[in-house]
Length: 474
Image 1 (cartoon, helix red, strand yellow):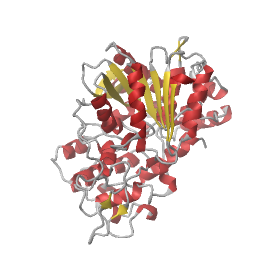
Image 2 (cartoon, helix red, strand yellow; image 1 turned 90 degrees about the horizontal axis):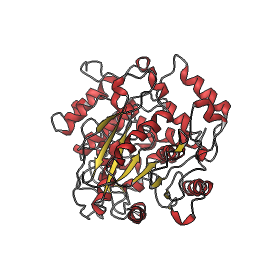
Image 3 (cartoon, rainbow, N blue to C red; image 1 turned 60 degrees about the vertical axis):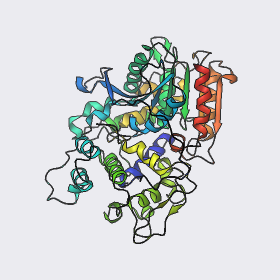
Image 4 (cartoon, rainbow, N blue to C red; image 1 turned 135 degrees about the vertical axis):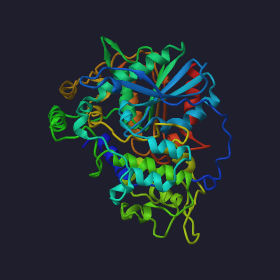
């Protein structure tokens, strides 16, 4: 199993086991006192995009959440990782544009999110329904057949066209976004987190009729993600494709035996309930849906459970892809333990906001339906070098030796990809003769969890490296 697959499984294992809780306002890190200037944040802006074979027209779209002044000319386009939605980058994007008013941040909302029914999450964000109503609509009916008004998951047999939503679709959709960003007349930088880093490499090295995707880009940003250093074999690619195309197979990635959309639903609804009602007794702790490894040893609040499940000090190693440095641990308060954020690198409220996205309608920071094909294809990128597995899957990331020599690159290694994010970036640059002076490389594998680069505040080494990188560009 390649590294991207392992990370995907780890992340979705966490989502699938029911993280019904997120953050509170008063209990977040005591260090997060810096006031960030307000930034304009759009709702998801959908654009007509690539016509994927067999896909109905209403799904041939790609979305972005635009953060910053509409008059800013430069754009940092950010691609989320496995099962990540556009809301994931909203807090970080606000911070970036507050210090760089000539830049906008566009966070990508992939087409699969058009399949989500966020109707009751929208109502919940508007404070029009209760936490219990939210839970019952999306999840409660699974254990209580008396609940008849509830969410209807998409039947996989009705969306078999999504089996084609691999790297070709993701790259073409990014091409649409980047073309729109160029219309503003400034510089465009492409970045990605986790699997999104592999998508960045794929886009930069993609063969667009003899021209690499990196032409026209001013920079690339890799956030604890990059192209794999062990390319998938043609045999493995063929097996993956045959398995996916079997009539009984779902288009969606399955983690730990949890089928789509329930992994995403556990995270989205749970994050929302705990964000809005953080100090109440955790529904998750008594739901019977959580593994023992992430259940606190004492009755806990929603905030307490969330911190216990995701904090690096208490969360199991198998869930490293979903963790952050969230603080000291559970409090000893009775009758319910809360969360002690002392020493947090990532304030727990900020961490939670990335997934709940309280200001967004019809969107959040997770995907309920993530294409298996995108995971399969990403294993073949190989820093843009043609290989037999790419031929099997129709991947065209073959121009890894033809990137513009003026291209700047920033790689930040955290817990999961670590030094590989750096060495992969160095190799990508060397292939095209890009000078070492164009690279900004930061290794924080020993101190930053996988999600800390986006969540850490007000001290954030990724952010501190990004500011001069963007300033150098424009």
